[in-house]
Amino acid sequence: MTDTLNGYTRRWWKEAVVYQIYPRAFKDSNGDGIGDLGGILEQVDYIKGLGVDVVWLSPHFDSPNADNGYDIRDYRQVMAEFGTMAQFDTLLAALKDAGIRLIIDLVVNHSSDEHAWFVESRLSRDNPYRDYYIWRPGDDGLPNNFTSIFTGPAWTKDEVTGDYYLHLFAAKQPDLNWDNPQVRDEVYDLMRFWLDKGVDGFRMDVIPFISKRPGLPDLAEDQRAKPQFVYSDGPKVHDYLQEMRREALAPYDTMTVGEAFGVTLAQTPLFVDDRRAELDMIFQFDVVEIDRDATGKWTPWRLQDFKAIFARHEAALDRHCWPTVFFSNHDNPRIVSRYGDDRPDWRETSAKLMATLLLTMKGTPFIYQGDELAMTNYPFTDIAQFDDLWVKGQWREEVDSGRVSPDAFLANQMKISRDHARTPMQWTSGAHGGFTTGKPWLAVNPNANEINAAQALADPSSVYHYYAAMIALRRAHPALVYGDYEDLLPEHPLVFAYTRTTADETLLVELNVSDEEVAVDLPAGTRLFGNYDDAAPVLRGWEARVSRL
Ligand code: TEU
Ligand code: CA
Image (cartoon, helix red, strand yellow):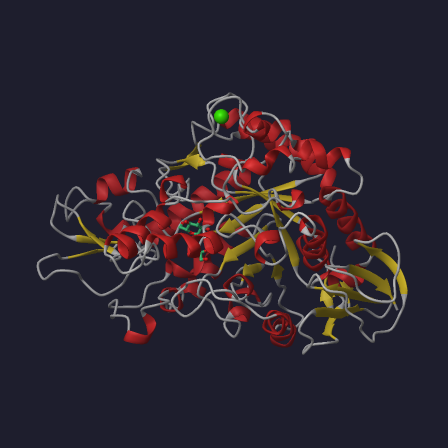
């Protein structure tokens, strides 16, 4: 595919819809309470039924699971709890048979501290692997004021040599030293290992963090609340990504998407402009940060500001750049609880509205497992119910120190916790939502008796079938992929209305982001699809409509 449409070069990954699987929480096939590759294999038809083109698998590599696999001990082994390499190969083949590509999670800003490289590295100052990580002498205390994204200092003193090593995440996630060419060669080598197996590309974990500022200068006072804007802005990141493309990716037909935590919209083209040969796409954090204040706590958001993000992207990204669209992932709360309305009367309608938005916006859409069932946030009431190391770190820092009350802490986590996304997939109304016959590693949401895949598959008007129909609609209308984007009502506080236009057609999307009836003055057009059965003169509560003008 090398032709163009509306000025864009057509590529399969621009036209694809991606489904993200967090294996630990997807489906357990052997009763140990942990999701696994066998479980995914059982559900290939379920995934195929949505009509998605690509699966992104969160880390499936050998790991001690300090951060649920985002701390890799061996990049060439499958996590024993998830299964075997033979099962991985079977899954890859089964997905290909179903017409689905597979991308895997490349976590190479850091490894586990149990990775053989780090085990060697910490042994002595002159170990050949010493320079695989970032060490500084420990005599004068912390080498600089960097903080870990997961709270506390980004340095840990290692008793063997008395030196500190850098970890921008947990202490069990030491940062690799990308300035060492041997490290880069190791990474390109392991990428080829998986590409040679037939994987179709990578989602790259916090990839902008790989280049560190020379001399590791301290964070300024105003950088300390959100250090990601410094960590993502090292001088060599683009050299390394271009080298990675040449050395590892170029011979293969891949898709790459970088998790660009801390990258601004202005910096985005530097990563994704196709003339630079770096990444195909990045995850920009504007949308998922809309309800966070300057310190990262939850804060209410306005529809006008939400809409403005998409208008800014349309203006800032030219025909050489391709966006992504995502409202959730394994690091964020559930879509329907956060942007929709998860009360019983509106849960399904508002989840369908969010599906309409996700699948009619410009950019490759990413669906996170369970959002196609309109799964909701978990009703957490106690710190003991959480699994995420980040929540536990924040609790120690804020509650144990007496700065924040337990109630205030829990109220905030109810809004933002990553664990909302990580509770097990709800397959049936049976015990543990049909996720496992054993004891699940994280509790299943008590609403699984009503909200589950068996129910959704049986109900033609379910959110699952709505996703499938929206994906089919997107496939049938190239304007929904490549069309120009224009916001028709940027100042409206309740309605999001926009067009997607190519030379061949103009589609109008109308979304009432509220439970009130609203009348808007927009052209009528021919109704193609929506979350109510019929056309009406007003937009009803959480109504979503797609029409052709
Ligand atoms: O996330 C990077 C990251 O910084 C997020 O945890 C971010 O802090 C959060 O989304 C802000 O809302 C990646 C992975 O997605 C995450 O699961 C890992 O824990 C982290 O890297 C470390 O590998
Ligand atoms: Ca299992």
